[in-house]
Length: 195
Image (cartoon, rainbow, N blue to C red; front, side, top):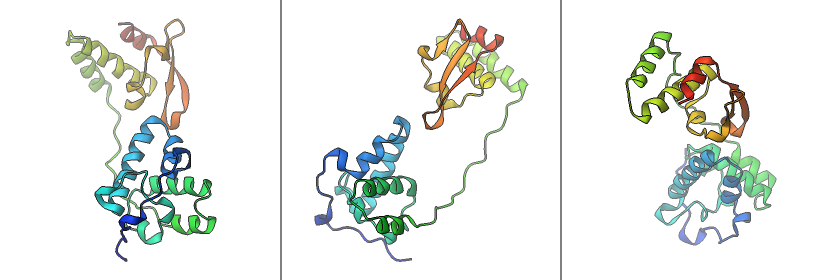
């Protein structure tokens, strides 16, 4: 594999309005959570290519080619930004297709979580009940929502009171990729969340 070719200082991207900057256009298409993580990924790529003098908006994204991407593990963020450069007319279709024609990097992931037994759930809830602080009630409500409604940690963390209709026991949940769904609270969960 060839070495990554760093851009020289005179190859920083020209200062563009944000609606013409591929990185800004790509990031604006993401949810807040995705925007933060991909902005960080793009910043890392910028530092790899340009050193400390780069921020994600000064990287000449349209000049990236195959040899650059082979050395970069954050392909998703780079591909999205290159797509934005192509959509903005800053990159030809041929160059875009050749540039993104890089196999995805497969990595090792941690094993998936496991389902908790009813005894483990009971022990967690007992610990929450023994905590007299507001955190105990909060934690019990979070565990109940995750267990009975199948909510993910991120979904529970992003809930507000506006998401909940206590009269109908209905909870509006915003999940992955900003997809909305409705969850209904059962009797036990209604009792725990009433606090």
